[in-house]
Amino acid sequence: VTEFTITTPTVDDALKEDTEAYEISVGGVDATGTILDNEADITVSSVTSDEQTEGTDLVHTVTLSGEADSAKEYDFTFNTGTVEAEDIEAFEFSNGVTYDASTGKITVPAGVTEFTITTPTVDDALKEDTEAYEISVGGVDATGTILDNEADITVSSVTSDEQTEGTDLVHTVTLSGEADSAKEYDFTFNTGTVEA
View 1 (cartoon, rainbow, N blue to C red):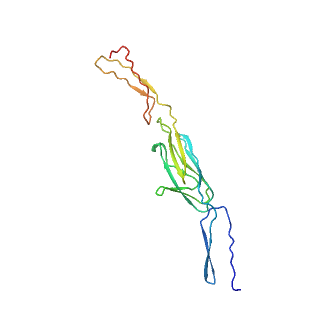
View 2: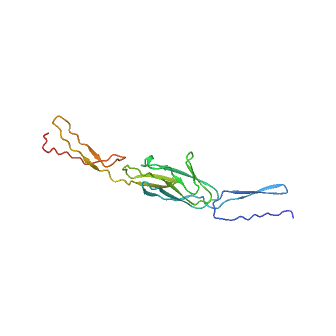
View 3: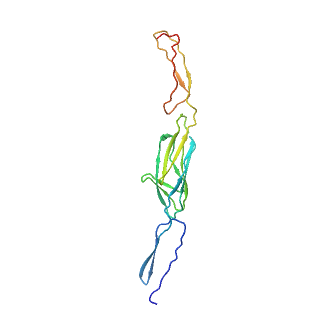
């Protein structure tokens, strides 16, 4: 025998794997075997949007296209949109997913095919407009919408006044609460029996 072969069967699985390699040595002569993966890259298939009343967490479910046998990185962006900083707390990731603010990337551990991004919201006493932010994971976008739970700010009272001519009349207007943005109210002035 002047020649023979060494055959290493490989397994075609459903995992997305990095290129793998092994080494053999026969009589002091080395060689390598390299296994190339045949699965498509694992991408982000979907990211769900969510809408909640303030004080309730917003939860976005991220689904990947498959399972990887090693950690994978994806771009992650969070655009605050119309949401004020004090109305939300730091977002949280499930299933061991981590975020690196310096690179703008998240790392998904091996074997994870789905995880959630949770945004806690703050229940304050301010009357606010509906607020919304945007997230993007691996190029797939979603929105988070925060609904206010305070009643509309109305005029509670307007005081009457009586003064001798030459002295200003002052009417104090009291609102039912505090708003975080400008509000409009109807105003009329009926001269009645007052001469211009």
